[in-house]
Image (cartoon, rainbow, N blue to C red):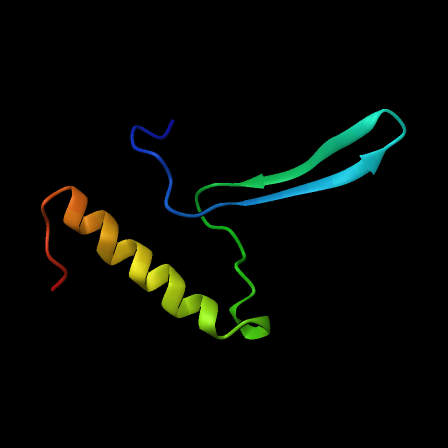
Length: 60
């Protein structure tokens, strides 16, 4: 169980006959496909720094 909201996740859906179906939910170690979108690594890093500021921690 996650006590705090997750900073990142991967959620995969498939279109089903009656609507969307959850195919995969990765909250702990998702594949983030940085190789397809190199700037996404910086976006994630910025999010981590922002989260650290909220909990009053500073990155090393």
